[in-house]
Image: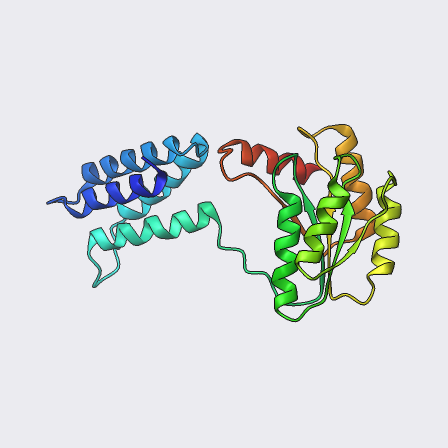
Length: 230
């Protein structure tokens, strides 16, 4: 059972309850907890999430004109939005974007998708290849840039990422959006941290986006914290 199905099942059971009292709310919260934990959400986040729902649902000053069931359902939606975050809506403005992530996370294809997104909306895009460790990274991004109708800059064989960024930004000066595709590793290590810091200093991005596989569960939080520290 996936997360969506688990949440729908819990809400359906709540709406089918005859009486909504403290016991019913706590039983509802247990179902929410099972659904979230089964989806590999961090336990601390799950309990904080359900505690907020329980505290709000047991308040004596419930909004007038709204049934308890509808109120609790809206609470779940609001808290889920806070927990998961709002959807990302890219601003259609000139900017520099730095993509980071470990091996296999999809940085390069994400760079190409972003390039096409901005190109289709009338902003000229340039892609910089700063992945100096993965074989064929240069060729892959160059090919994807052509498919997205975006400009491409890379320095095949060059290992100095700061130099690549510096010369890339100069070469792509006429582009409204410049996207830098950084290298990855199997995990965070000192070499990757130093590389990202060097790119960040030289590139001075307006946005830093961490690309993560959608199926890694709790590891996403740890990975995000590690990259944030870097």
